[in-house]
Length: 215
Figure 1 (cartoon, helix red, strand yellow):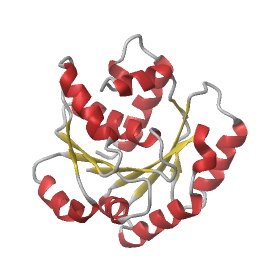
Figure 2: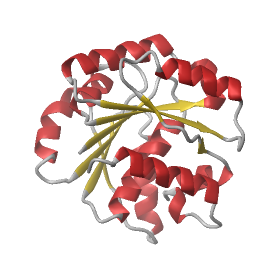
Figure 3: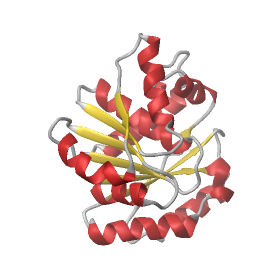
């Protein structure tokens, strides 16, 4: 199964979702590779930090360019059960290829950076991918540092998600508070971080279940 995490604003939300989904799937006993197509290489750095701390199950990760993405995926499918792609935020060959290859596209929307969302560009990128990949399942996932995010911002994202021809708005807002940020810094998933942020753990576990529901 190929899961592509995309966004249209930059920031850490996309990589945090990609890394946590890859970690949860690995901890569930699946053979997973995390591909980093973002120029910031945040997921690759997270994986290296995870490996260096020596206290957790390592997550296989590698950098991949847009030009090499499609042919490499054909090879990787033979060796891994699941592939999680942290795609580039901007519209480019890599971000388009990642959507074309995916079974599920998770669109990360940070409610705290909503003013930076390039809505029309992201919408067009996803819709073009759907034209060539009609089986693509789209999930729009919100995150916020606030326990009770602004209802007005949630309404804006709901309206945005309805612009896609077929997209599911994940109902729960992922709590991206202090614990999730520290876990990300230390190469951990939120489920492994102590002291536990039960709200963030529950949200990520629920998202994990929704993303991999058919597999």
